Image 1: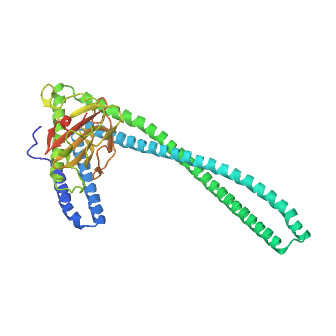
Image 2 (image 1 turned 180 degrees about the vertical axis):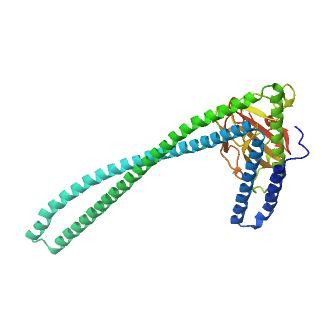
Image 3 (image 1 turned 90 degrees about the vertical axis):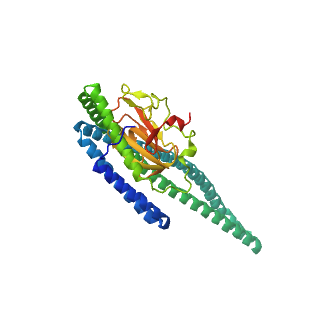
Length: 389
């Protein structure tokens, strides 16, 4: 692990101080009501987001080209996430439309059956009105016979009224379904229009990102400069991890929390794929070593958390691109870098397998892959010892 500079930038000290205070305040949550806990969490999220912006801004000011790359990749990540949300909404709307249309078909069948029964009842009523009551009077039947016949008429009329009531209710439901179907179709059209606009924006965002990567690559003309750039990126990540580690040490965890070390060797990999490197092996002509695993995967593939924990970083970082860090307690953290989009915000709790991001190539990478690290007390540890398969 690259040594941490003796003097860290003020922004890192600010991050550590702010989060330590937020973490220490967590001790009082046991005596606080749910509303106070929620307010404190919102404040924690707000503080971290603000400091994240300061971190990103401070990093970007070091290099205009890095600033351009950050803007392009952040925009692209947000757009990808928005498009995915919109596509899921369209899928939900389509499923709802299918269900509504099926319900409408069933109600139409019920209406037709009720209409047929009403026709038969009306014909019977007409025949009874023309013959039944007249015959009773003309035949001068006994009062008991007349009473029974009139009781039958009342029963018949009541049954007919109930059938008519059911028919009116069916018509009312059909009218309501017709309006819901029309509303759903309108919603689908609006979602489709939004998606088409997003796709146009996506093409521009991809072009901006490609140009930013090309400009950045052109500015690094030698292997020495490439190594220097990677060393700077590594220091940036190390400083961030150290600041977060100091900040979250006192954050409370749920009562049903399973210790990270108890799941050693049984955790799922964050994404399926064959690693392209091995932990601890040399890189960059032996000047550096791999502190994590790179897993090539299809762009947009879902990345899952390896264990229960809390998101403590979700933003862009130089060299890592769109980066998400999860604190698992007891000094354990997992890092997921070069994402296409980030699906979780700072402060959110996640469980093993929870979708947290999508595979991408942010940070200036030339192909889609996930860079994955596990750390304990700030020191990298071999992910293969923790994840199965």
